[in-house]
Amino acid sequence: MRCVVLLLIAAALLAGCSGSGGARDISSRLRMTVWPMGVRHVSQTWTLRCNPLGGTLPHGDRACYELAVGRELFAAVSGGRTCTQVYGGPAVAEVHGRVRGEAVGGRFTRTDGCEIARWDRVRFLFPGVRRKS
Image 1 (tube, helix red, strand yellow):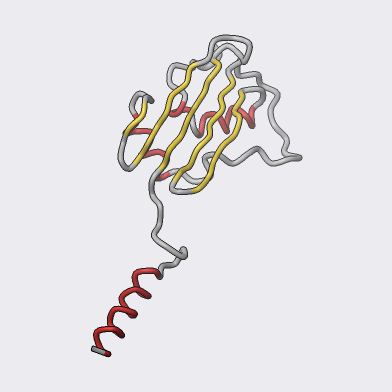
Image 2: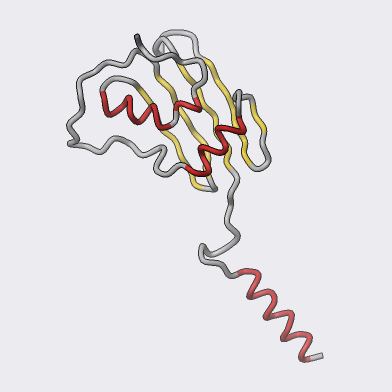
């Protein structure tokens, strides 16, 4: 009986151990709201769920793949950085949720070269928003 109890304790300890302090959450859930012509105009909203796949975002499978392999997709533009003064259009987007179990969120614009590059990293979340010609 004592061996059985020790085996159960060992199994429980091993099940609770991992490099991140628990089971790794690989699911993602996002809500994206986009104002293609600026915040004073009509908005579009989509949702996305990965693992299992779901939501209203067109081509959600591709978006889930991009979220799975991408790194620092939601990183803000660092302060003091020199950016080209190129205007990419009035579009604004907000994204909130979790990616691979981590909270993410932010506002995306196309007001200068740095913000355009940031937008382009996650443009797969904003279908139908065209680049300024």
